[in-house]
Length: 502
Ligand code: ZN
Image 1 (tube, rainbow, N blue to C red):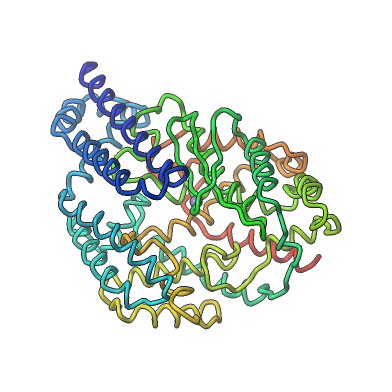
Image 2: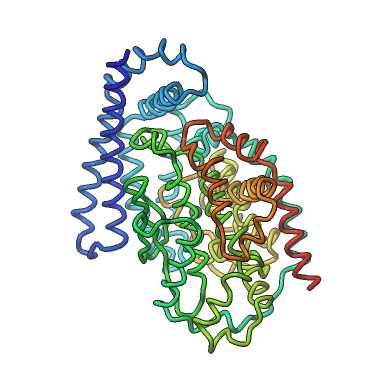
């Protein structure tokens, strides 16, 4: 038994190391690689991916899991070893279900469709992207077939991002949210301009401010890096080697929020218990991932719940004012706080504020379900998109680039990903409410720039758990119940009500 467990752990640790090497090659591709390196890098990544896949789906892993079955069953249900065996079994079986040719076809179509999407978006020409989307949809439905029988193909795809959750669960949450968000937007949307938000804000100074926040939130200086990329993300090479990326624009100060967002993802990874290091419990081991909603709840908690709060800005605004005196010297903290929380009707999801954001996600979730069920044909997608944007946001979509072609996700047929963004927003507030119960003076601490109690609470009650429990169990532990849109709606109402009254 001991020998079997040791062998399994050794194999899994090796896979985790290869996975991390792959992460660093991907990070380098985005941060440092000269453009001409892309072909060589693609070959390296494909080679690594093949090795990782082959080592993981190896029959020997299955034999070890079978051999360890009685041992796992003899352990208390929440022991680390029992959970390690369960998680590995789930990943192994899921990965073995999908034929290698299909994985390769999805990857190939994804890479080619990405190029086509970039060009189609530039030209604002949906017709040029349409064949790729049709092919991606067809392949994704074949992928769902690997997990037949199912009630709804969407359930299968959602399970890759949010294990255990079903489309019907998401629908129930979004049905509550939609009318609430529509009415909040109707009540609070404004076209008012805040000219001071357009800078100029020197990029080096934005970088220095970002580092200051990240370290105050909880990173030790030698345990992370912050670099520049076109599309910000977080990745890691070890539990004490977290890589965060961001982007800067001299004409806005959004980078501070981007840094807080990616820092939140980073703190989650940074806080995983050291005993899960180099095991599937540290996070995504195979082709599947752990709850994107939980991950996003932490980027949003730090970016929005903390980072757009008045206590946070009472602490940090004087630093920003000192850094940009000619732009913000005469702007009071209340005006700045109002500007970073303004509700605006906009066409682009990634530019949306906290209140309108959910409507962008609901729209995508509905259209994805219609596409997968065959109720909506790909050629009719732009019209369906534009009609729904008008219903939800009251906006006319002038062209496909600012409509149906705006997001990268559909280029590799990643259906089922979008809803996790909004589930993360909803969860962020549920978790924040629990943290506030445990640390009653947390807002006073934030006003002093002290985030240590909040960070410790989150580490103890969430981050350290890694992937040990299922997403539903983890959510139950940290939030005290399942995903519930109530607290999120109340949070938005309170914030916008306070801003309207001031
Ligand atoms: Zn995120």
